[in-house]
Length: 122
Length: 196
Image 1 (cartoon, each protein chain N blue to C red):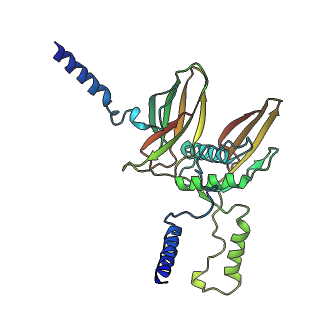
Image 2: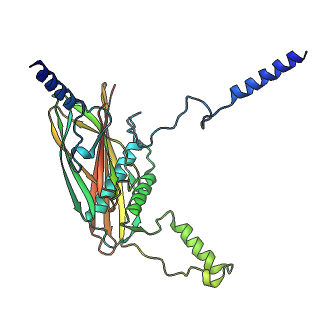
Image 3: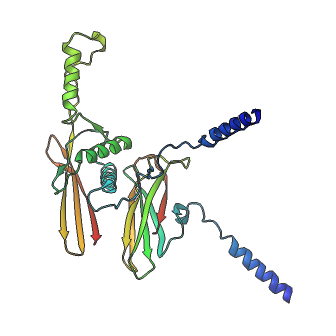
């Protein structure tokens, strides 16, 4: 009985130690958080191509009841996974307490086929 | 005596190696290069982040609007500064031009500041008799603009004992030169508040 418990505990520990990486192509795989995100949740993303340019809309959620600020910028990538444009300028965004919002973006060049959203909370 | 000489030589060698610098940097440690893309909030006057955000937002909106079909020729006019502060608005138009050019959606005719140099060069080539004829750029072939791009920036500043609030509004419009119709328009609003 003890052995079974020990094995179960080990299995649980191993499971906790290595969280599965986000599935390729999933919303989570597009987010690069610089450190832990505090009180900001990044939800589903809508990706489309309009007039030849990639457009993205990202849903955001403030899990705190206080106003929270975050810094963000998009990196636009080509087919080979490398940037196709100059790095964007960092921008700041304030979400009111418990607010859900959307963050729209347009790629700077038609060559962009993928993106990464870099985020940081102060 | 020999021993003193040797020890002096060793001391000089030690000093020389001690001074050797293997870092690619030179100068004071108080000066450093920063990230040009960082969010700048040193004061709440118009700053680098405002310039970059305006140019980025306007360019992308215009490029993606689908108005600029077939890389039309655009003439850019200076942005009118209606704010109470000094802003080098030419830098806003230069950034917009550069980013539109990089997006491959538009070509640009000589604007009012470049025009004199362009005319001077054409005159020099055609009238001075200095150049080989086959290499001379002929007059009468300059391409006229299909659209003109013009904008303005204005601000509302409010102060109280506790706050200073600055609201900037940048507007840009693309006008068809022949018809005079505005084909595209967009605005970018920025609010900056300082708590004293």
